Length: 115
Length: 110
Image (cartoon, rainbow over all chains, first blue to last red; front, side, top):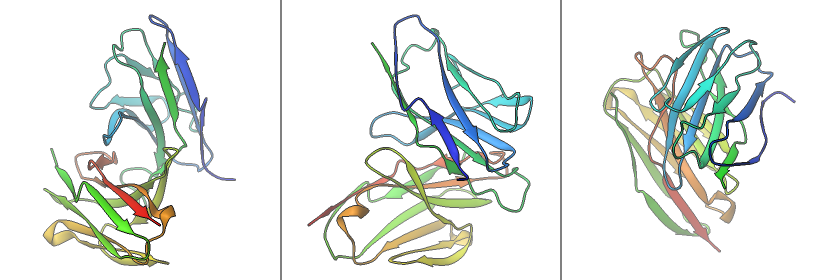
């Protein structure tokens, strides 16, 4: 099936530990995005990538890092510098910003909890 | 930057009732999407509707770009319609990134 796969579904992080969230898509989309959602809130942009080997910071990038070595993959690392990492993380992909169809699709999310 | 405001923030309906959710945006947009977030957190695409009207079963949406608003209509609501409905837009300056409203939380009672 075509779509976006995030793993793991649930993740527990100890204080001071880095963790990496996986996001893979087989939609042949150029653009990929990471969003964070806190309880009762909308989604806020962490990082985005419009093309392989290039990415930009979103509104709340501090304490996070990404890479985009392959078109299909856009992993997010939550570093120990992120002071309040407990949240729901959603990955999305879409066609290029300048393209005719930029409809975005989301993965099922990763729920990260600090223990 | 652009502001996206959704109303009402909360809505409680009896099963079978109809409802209208509204999304206002403060600047011109390239694209607009409506999503339903289910109880497990997944965002389900409802409509990709930068302008005009679309229908899909009991749901329909209208975007009037010149007046900067979009409406989502739910007819004959069912308990499975419960969840949070988000409106999200992209602009010329957002480089394809979706900017979300805070959502409308819908509860449909049996």
